[in-house]
Image (cartoon, rainbow, N blue to C red; front, top):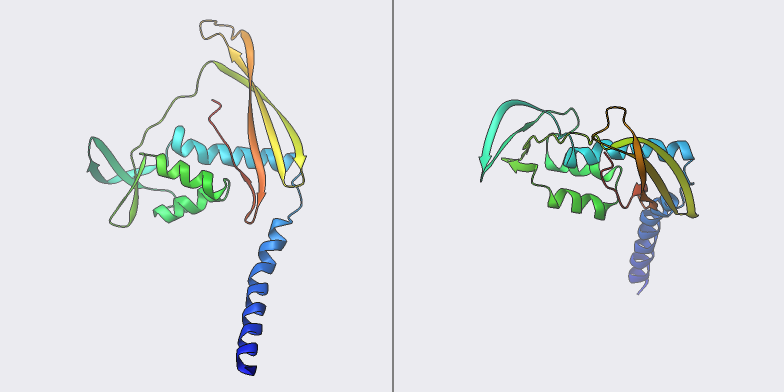
Length: 186
């Protein structure tokens, strides 16, 4: 009975040690407005890997799959799909990052290596300058409001005809502050 109690006590201690850093991380202080905007810029770069300019390739190795042609990814910190997942989860929640990767046809594993079907989508000529507003809803939730000018594409003088506001949910997770929602602005 004494041995069982000692084993249970040891398990409780291990669980407490494992949970301690996670609880401390979850209590991470709210970022400043400047940090939120810097995180937004980083998230925009990563999001563009899926909906804008894909990760680069050197074109040395090519694989065909269905009607798509994939080339090996040539990016310093990303060689495998787990690398892409890690980098995506640095800026997005696990759920959002997994959905982003899972729905994408741009990236595929071949023989353990990450390949990309390079597709570059041009930025819209209808989107002008953007303004940003950080709204703090709770200690663990921030909404970033991004308002962009809408430009008349037929105008040579870039006449602004309106604006559009898109909201991005920025939440405190066990891994730190991450975007739970994101979309392409430009």
